[in-house]
Image (cartoon, rainbow, N blue to C red; front, side, top):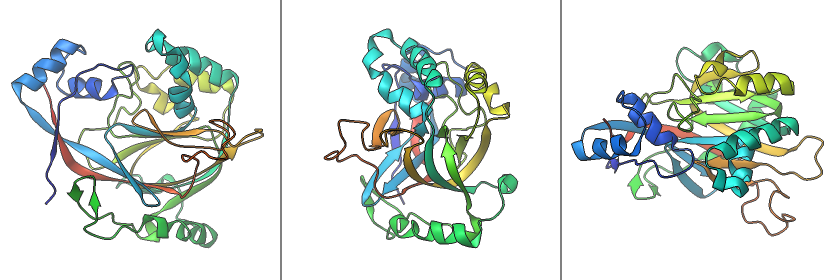
Length: 292
C-alpha cells in the first residue's frame, strides 16, 4: 500500500489555489495566519493526486493541468510577476484580444453520472486512441517518485473523444485555481475524480463574459463551456491555428510541462517540445493535507 504524503500549505506564491482550496474546505478565511494555524492544529484530510505520463516521463499533480489560454496566461505573464495576481487579469485581456486556438485531440473517461456528455467513440476515433495507448501502458509496480502503484488504462469503450480546435482544456483537482478564481466549483479534495473544463469555439466577447465569472464559479454555466468530472484524460496537443509557429504551453501546477515548437526560441533544440500524448489519471486520497 502506498504511503500517504503529508502536505502543509502556506500561501507564498502568486496564485495560491491549493492554500485557498484547503482553507475554503475548513470554512476559514484565506490568509497566511489561518494556513499556519491549520498546520499547527494537525487536523488532516485526504487529497487526491493526479499522475501525468508522457512517454517515459512521469509527474504528479495536486492542483491543475492546463492547455490553451489559461496555460498561455499562466506562463507568459511571468514577465509581469511584480504585479502580483493582477498580472493574470492584464494578460488575460491581452490573450482574449489576440485569441489563439490550437489543434488537438482530447479523450477522456467520464465519471459516473457524466457518461452522456458525448457519444461513445467511433471506429475511426478508436483507432486514433489506440495509437496513443502504448504510451500509457505503465507496468504494475513501477516506481513513481517514491511510491509503487499501477496506472490502469480504461477500456476503449469507456472513452469519449473530441477532435478539432480548442481555446481551453483545463483539468482541476481542487476547486480554486488561485485565491480569486473558483475554476471548478464542484471539485472536492478527495472524490477520486478530476474536473474538466473545455472551450472549443466562441467569440472574444463570450470568452470575456465567461472569464469575468471565474471569481464565483458561475462561468461553468456558460454555453461556451463544457464542464464535467472525469476519471482519466489523454491529450494530444497540436499547433496553433493560423499561427506562424506551433506555440502554446501545457502547464502543470503552474509550471511548464511541455510547449509547442517556437514557444521558446526557434524550438529546434527545445527538450520540452510536444512529444508523446499526455495521459492523466487520478488516485483517490493518495496524499494527506493539513486542513482547518
